[in-house]
Length: 325
Image (tube, rainbow, N blue to C red):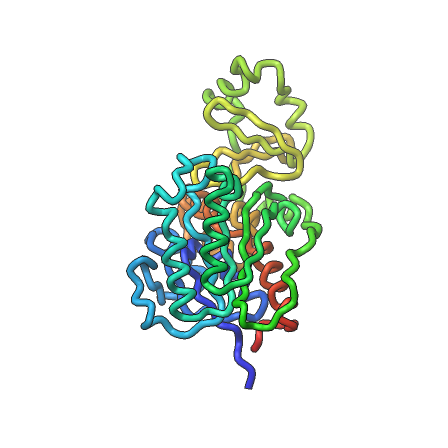
């Protein structure tokens, strides 16, 4: 009798990675999330109360057997937005705890995600240390920076992904997925939940007319076309067409044009831009969750469509066409 590949969702956030694996027929048997706020959203999405909590405190031998580790291990320690302290930051040491779990439990496969900044952190020494750690733990390790905008969603989001297969498991060379087209941006910036934004907002006008931007942008002209996207924060003002900049925890000021008006990006729309199916994303509307919280949580999430494709390629390298042993 065939059984589904089982996985545990570590540093799970709101479960974007989980969705990507489930779309390949895999089964989540537990998750680990230390922050209660995203975990409430996770439980809403999946009705899964089996939270293992702080992974640094997990009793590893007591963990159930599973086939694949999924983890978006903390990225602040390596991000260009943070202080880039790397292994000197306690959050950067989570990778050691993950490797302990991999080796103790002899996990066959893993998919890990982190910010692009990890690749060049400390002149590449941090990356090499992580690769060496994973290889010494007994894995063939493959890594690559992928941009979500080329993998199913119109969001500029570069992340480094690590795929590991235990060396004693027969497999073909892992091949990262090829880019594929996404739906038009109109699907993601929908009519279901829109917030009008006052173009005469004092702070907005201040940024628009700052010494760096004065005369550079014509708002009336921008409003003529639908789906021009504006990112404004800390006096910065950037314009994009038919795509959005990277969603981040602290970036809540993304605007877009439609029908001659400015609209503020909603939490629901942010989830769609991370590849969450609409039937899942709608739950935040139905349960009246705070938009600011969902925007923050979406900014920390994995892109569903990217993880889906990574897992699909993993199964191909194992000679499988579905998520079964």
